[in-house]
Amino acid sequence: MEQELSHQWKKKLDRFKEEFRQRHSIVSPIPLYPSKKDLVLVASGLPPVYFHNKLNRPRQKNHGLAIYLDVSGSVNDSLPEILGILRRLQNEVTSVYQFSNQVVETSMRELTRGRIATTYGTSFDAVARSILDNAFEKAVVLTDGFSNIESELQKQMKGKGVKILTILFGGASEKNDFAQFGEVIHLKDAVG
Image 1 (spheres, one colour):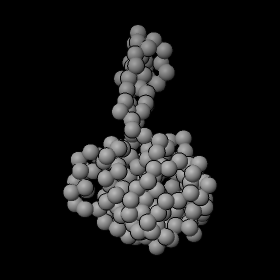
Image 2 (cartoon, rainbow, N blue to C red; image 1 turned 180 degrees about the horizontal axis):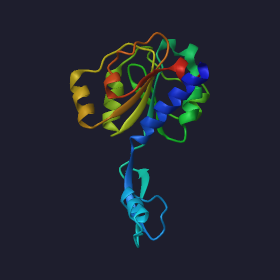
Image 3 (cartoon, one colour; image 1 turned 135 degrees about the vertical axis):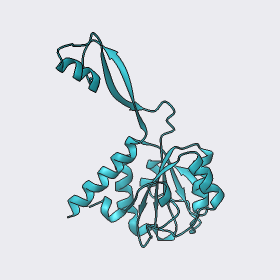
Image 4 (cartoon, helix red, strand yellow; image 1 turned 45 degrees about the vertical axis):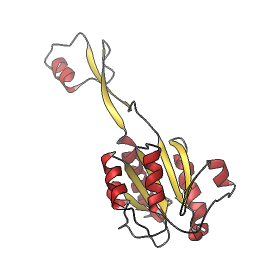
């Protein structure tokens, strides 16, 4: 059961990352990844001179993946599991931020050393402003808090097409303001 939940979490994360890749074609005399049209021509006995190979690549405007970690007072119990999640994402991560009532940029190294900057509160507005100010297209928010995002910030994030994967820990509810921007999963399902 735990292995199945972990597999489901990985599929959700892969699907989240895949949203930020685009398909493009290259023309080549070698059929690396031929298009359907090329396959039909080959099947009909009329092989094309050049194949239209379909490839996936990151979008040109790639601002990376930002991690926002809730460091309110109750985070200490879940920190080992959270760091395990962050290690899985470290190749995709461009920025790591700690947030309470304010957002502070940090590094994976500082987090693993236990260096936390917190005001012990929780503000989703601070996270939304940081995402918008840094022009991030996608973010992962790890939180146990209950907070709201003011409606104007929600509109701005929707207008920019921001995608957020929310990983909940502690007693957090799936019905938080980040849920409208993407998948919501529980930490216990992710580390299984």
